[in-house]
Length: 147
Image (cartoon, rainbow, N blue to C red; front, side):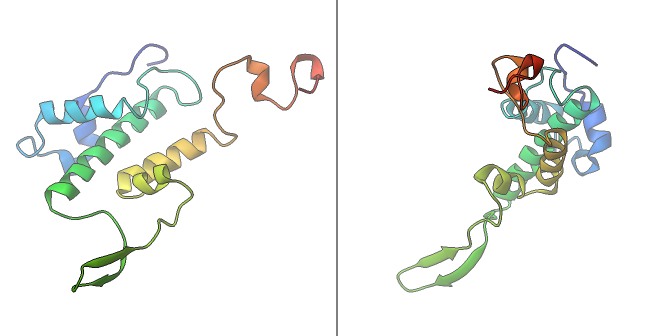
């Protein structure tokens, strides 16, 4: 699985996430559409800190997260924390998310998103570096020269 593009394996997905095993409730085409959407958040390109089974797991977790969020919306639930509400003149107060970013809050809405956040955090303990020379991701440049 090293290198190349990771493809969606619906059978493996259903085995890993039994909540989505029902083929009538979750048809293959629907899961594939969610996988396609998941690739907008997690690249299917097998490279970087997240490779092989870890990248496939991240993609499957994002797919499961998106499907679970769709189920929450279908059920008419609002993924938020209401701290106060009134009826006359309609006022609702929401508690701010207890996380650092909107991305973390969004992932915390489902157990699959929480697992994905943990996987991404563990894989990028020192943070991700994008672009430039490889030595730019370190504290010193090649031959020990500081930037």
